[in-house]
Image 1: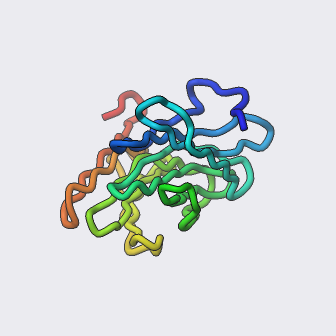
Image 2 (image 1 turned 90 degrees about the horizontal axis):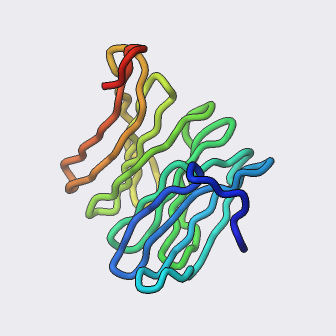
Length: 176
């Protein structure tokens, strides 16, 4: 199946393993639909492509992998945001929805125990959520800049005890 009407704003690079690269995005049409592709690193051919639409008007904004070749993608819908986990064969492992309204999931990370850390923002608060390898929420933290606006950034899980998170906050004139 070909993706239609793609623009540069519709694609997000995902993880990279020794064998595969992952690319996620969404087809911009009347009812946006997200997709993930697994590509061979050696020649760029597509092994599999999965389309998903967990709700109305699906837009993908994040994609990353773990050391086992599982791929995670996140995005938003009209009423919430979502994260999904697929195994290296493209089979859905779990799907979670968070928040209300259009919130914008960003990058995530996976520690050596398989815990997944994802970040999203509501426009005023950046949220960091820890899920176990089965997708069960372990905890959620909020981060707010002094000006009250916040954008999610990058999450890096260095090990099971150290997580680094970036985000930006704006005072209405500048972003820091």
